[in-house]
Amino acid sequence: MMAQAADKAARSLIRDFNEVENLQVSRKGTNDFVTAADLRAEQTLKEELSRVRPGFGFLLEESGPVKAADGRSRWIVDPLDGTLNFMHSVPQFAISIGVEQDGELIAGIVFDPIKDELFWAEKGRGAFLNHRRLRVSARDKLSSSLVAHGRSADESPEARQRFMTQMNHVLSHTRDLRRMGSAALDLAYVAAGRLDGYWEDGLKPWDIAAGIVLVREAGGYLTAVDGSPVELERGSVLAANPHLHGQLHKALAGR
Image (tube, rainbow, N blue to C red):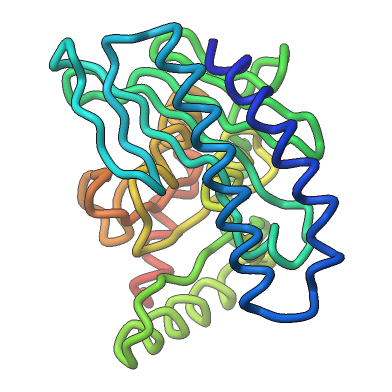
């Protein structure tokens, strides 16, 4: 049901993505267009998911929370994760849908409509890319790893300095870094073993809800960047395979 909803929303996103290049004449014009595309996709997802689970609530990026009729379950939805990529015609963005029940994340999908890749997972049933079972990478040396990162929306001088320091620390310990521009896909790529690790602060629940389930079910390990338990509302994530998580945490701390 999540996959069908995502597929329907993706059709309009793909049409809009193909029009973005024609709007690269003013920042305002492009921003307005992408906002409209985001809202259209969100409305489609809300309608489709409400139809199959009318008792569920929502946490939506654009239109906010909707209380669950059953008081237990909600969809956590990002209709367009990777907005800046979308705006610049970079084909690296996704639809992310997580399911939370009684405060616990139990399922999620991340759908890349350009590559037609559906990453999905359910608690206790594993993680998959389309029909293929996923496992995190088996690399055990940080020096041979490929790690992704994202920049917090916090533009304070302290936050910028912290980000640059973290990046320099990790770059000196790894094979290389990547900044892909979509937290949902970064987590999905960790689950698929394409990336060995990923960290970012300043995220929103809809950025990471589905990805958290994917990484856990693929055998990965997640905490906040400081090593404390990962929490949706806090928005700090450090994800890696079990061999590298501790090494990456130490590198981020400059140790």
